[in-house]
Image (cartoon, rainbow, N blue to C red):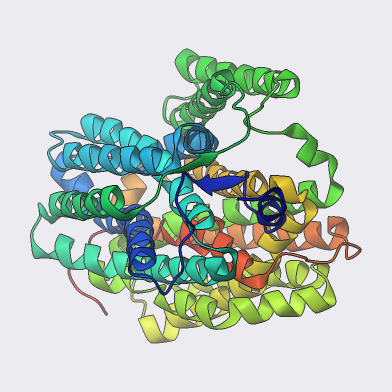
Length: 519
């Protein structure tokens, strides 16, 4: 690749200069190009499918393994914890040692951890296996998109990323339905939900080994920021453990110690990253007011979504008696609205500037969450759930593409990849902390979780609180987001990144609970 071509690739938003070792770049129309696209879609689809399938299965897991509310929180959070803590490191490892190699390692790791989840004898082992799944996800998730950016010619890259984004979204949408069918088939059907990852992963590995070219960063390699990665993961682990276990243990010494150690690790992480020669998180990105503001809005909105979508599946199935399939299908209209409207909203934001859609969108999302107070013990999907879902989906369509494009436009071209990864990581971390905090904040106890009437009362308090948080996100955007910077990111690229840091993060929290009939 010539120096000029490499510079053009950087300007298009690749994380680092890339090249396929001694191989020409591919076209979408070629046979090998289609195989590469299949491998990346299946690889990222396995992780997306698993996230949504697992959430549908949560209460059946609880019943089978005698796991309480706190254990269900950890079955969700253990995966997100290691994924969020190691995601940036996964991208750096791919750049340094080869994206195909690290992607395949992630897929194999994910499959082995999934098999461990399927045979887990108790909740503690399952939580440990979920944490190992997150490590695999952190290795494969950045690699799938990076392989496309590195393997295809410039003219075909946007089309490849668009196909990857759309089909990965389909996997996310189908996951709850598939999970509901598996879980509804038998009490142990949740184990099959984990096992389906193994044959899918085998196909991904075979296709990748045969057809995907190896690529890596061609610049002189710097030292990997191992210290930064360990501090990031350690700080998250300590803070999340303290916030999750503290209310249950009445803030005993171990919970407070973990919370304090997590906070200390976070402070040390900031110091280490500010002094590292090749930091995992370049802190100079946050010198941009626009970048910092957009990420602050991301944290607020995705905290609200993470908390609400943790409560919603519990309410639909435990409180309202929906079947797993019905609850898993409840948010499908959001996917439809996102696919139909996101690109249009992105183009509109390009003309008007990001402030208006990023101010209005979260308020509309909050209105959708507020409408969920209608979901009670005798809830009807058409009368009570669907109106809230439609308003929520419209709000997300207004918000997500402008938000992601603003993050990318606010970062230097050479750091567009890491800027997207930071935004993705913050979205996941916000949801992680919300799941840890919300039950205690609204007074939801393990006994309330088992009682439909009590659960419904706490659910209504929770979604109203999360609606207020979303409205706060809109107000924050109105105050801090500027219109002086044009959204220079191509809309196809924006939508691609939305698939990572956009609605799929929140939709993955859908669909858990038990119930015998759907009213």
